Amino acid sequence: MRKIENPVLRAGALLLFAYRRAWLTMRYGRRLQLGPGTVFTGRLVLGRGVRVSIGANCRIGKRVLITGRGQVTVGNDTLLNGCWIGCEQKVDIGSFCLISDCDIADTAFHNLSPRLRHEPLVPRTVAPVHIGDNVWIGARSIVLKGVTIGDDSVVGAGTVVREDVPPRVVVAGNPAAIVKQFRDDE
Image (tube, rainbow, N blue to C red; front, side, top):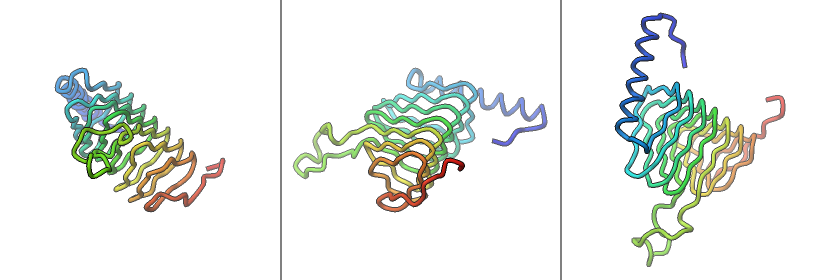
């Protein structure tokens, strides 16, 4: 984020961010925990039942929508920018991540079998999602249930991730395929 040089403008911005944090904490109560220094340049909207913990110095840009009945945990210094997170069980996002306009879901939302499609979810329709530290997820990407994305990886724009992604790689396409591996000096 850009540093504001003018002390009056900087004080005004800090006051605005403190007001937004206080208002969200009051609105969502114990379902939302915000770390110190979290900055809101966009909106954070929580669906009923979901619990969210956001680490220190995170940035919320555009409209971030989090729905479901599970627990979402976001590490420190992470940017959530216009994403949607559907969480019935658990979604973990690491520190120093860049999460663009994408969809992340730990559930299929419906049973696959036609006979059970309108029934309550069976256990295999839900699996936790884990996103490591320093991961960048590009715009219009989809991260599906049960996926682990390794540290320092990049998910290209428009990618559909349905299997685990190893650390220090770039994946792209539908389904996601490794297109680059980072060297140690990168």
